Image (cartoon, rainbow, N blue to C red; front, side, top):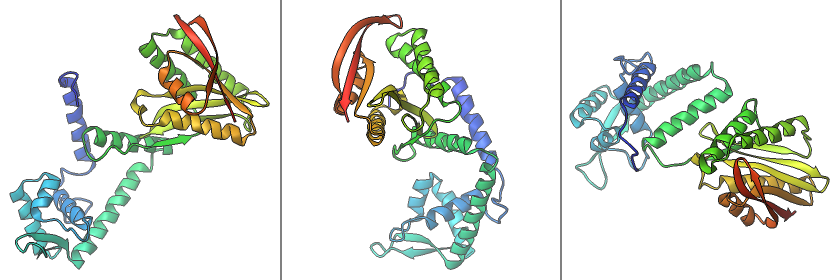
Length: 313
């Protein structure tokens, strides 16, 4: 990963502030967790042992590496859990010197109670949030883990209908994106606002559709299908946020448009774009669209070449 510059004092302070909030939130500063007789390190060790593969229970050394805990400190905690009859050490079948850690029946019962209490605590924490807020929170947590290298990059997309606020967001983001990447002026944002407004005012539920794409709880793309005439559907305002590029989202959005139009009995689909939008043009061409017309024009503060593409359905 390439660093643009060193972290600022403000960045460092913000992360430390979040860490203080999080330790307070999960009760890490208390010597007992979840109104139990166990501390956070003890509960975490029980969790790792309980969730290890049955055919590959961890040793104390492996557990220390997973949890990044001091070996001596971890050994004392494991010994304490062993003394309480929660954990046992068993020589591995392939290496008698390697002692695998597993839960006793009592240990499993204690862990199950702690696990249920933790789930109830989190449920209570999330209960006051709306579904949208919960999605944003969970998405932000996924992003934090991904950005700090915790686990593989498993980002997936969710396509849904628009909600209040989404259409204004589309206008805002497209205006910013095209200004930043192509130098287009604010008249492009006005065009997007006009198209979006017209879609809402003249919406034909059985013949038109808008898809909003979410990734990690954040909107990262959108596209519209509108009726041009009884036999022709028009694809409009395909947008993929830079954070979601290279993952096939643009192609998927276009495929959804084609399937929708076919299902509604349209005979063809058309779209208008500009020749400098190379990535979008490649998506259209791969989806079976053919360039049928192009014409120079001066719009959005730039000299451009507009193009009309068509696909038979």
